[in-house]
Amino acid sequence: MDGQFWYVYMLQSIDPPGHWYVGMTGNLAARLKANNALKVPHTLKFAPWRIESAVAFREKAKAVAFEKYLKSQEIYPKVVDDELKKAAYLGVAVNPPTAHAGRSTPP
Image (cartoon, rainbow, N blue to C red):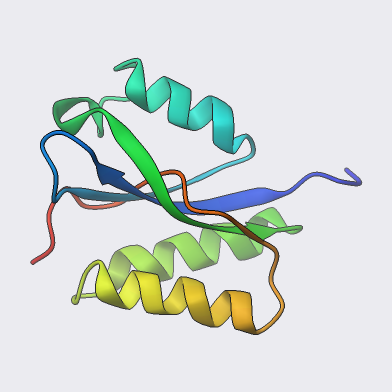
């Protein structure tokens, strides 16, 4: 589909602060709204959230692979944030900060 992007995003909890989550969606605004409306089981415990970083991909398979890669990182969320910045530097479309995703706390 032309114009469709898939987003890999990192959420940060607002209150309580310090929790992180990485995920993927085709609609970033709707996903953040669902997370904050307590409709997503993986994020409801630490809501509300804000988007910290997001990277847009035209190909869903690339977004899935990138999300899997980020979730596999042991140093979290610094590695995730560094990888998102690297993707932006390499020319991947990036959205301004607004969400959070993945694990609930850094190791």
